[in-house]
Image (cartoon, rainbow, N blue to C red; front, top):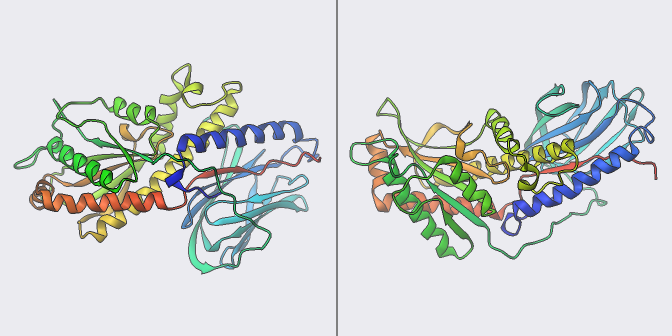
Length: 401
């Protein structure tokens, strides 16, 4: 399933997932066991990532041992899963690097075949036991593109989502403010720099006419961290970017970096969301089956993390192209509070080190800062022009008609 982010709201996308997820659950409950005739089956396949890297998650009724038959270098990845059955077999369209997939029986095992959009290699594969709110096993395969062309089968037709007329909404968060000045350089404070950068980015995006823009603050005031996230979620934002200036003990350390949410942070985000009694309504979930709602929440959050990572990669590419210095490890992850929204793609951009004299001068100089801001705006343009990195639920066991 391909998404055009310039015309696609995450909330609308989430509703589509909701419909698919509920349908999947109903069919699975109706057909599971009757159609398969075995107790331990492949329940379905989910995908997350983009055309460069894709995570394949095979949901299983019980533990399985995987063996790779074809590794993906020829445009097809095939493996067997000993210990689980395939029932009558299922197939469907994929996402990211996976063009289509099929699960079939292979004696006492299941045979999983992934047709790839490009040649790829397996980066890692592992089995996850039940845990973290998931009651079944998951066999995970991470694959990365090696760039080779693969001819698409003629039977596959692209599926496109509904389009929305509204321009994407970008929420810009100027870090710190008010009684919290943030890090301090020789001449400036972090909150002063982040506000100037946020106002410049707002103006740059408004000039394009392609976006709606909302700031969490436009003056020197303090906004609580959870309130910044609430602003983005309540506005139904399509993207959230928090601007900061880093600090370090070594004044020679300089360069920009981008943070996205870590796995530990993702678990914290789920805890924060589900703490409220009406979290189902807050996430636009049906609220009739807690297990279904948790699955849908997990899918929504995974898609949000994928989109955040996609934007981070694009953003760093444009910042580097603008000759703005980057840290050696420029894409990082953390459980930062402003990244916790489960349904809004979000990054935190450390524009440079205020404790480094060169970075402080660059961020304090309006012309040099504007060059960075222009690169950020170009990264936002590029991100919204790309197909979305998302998660698709697929692989409902056949009901046998």
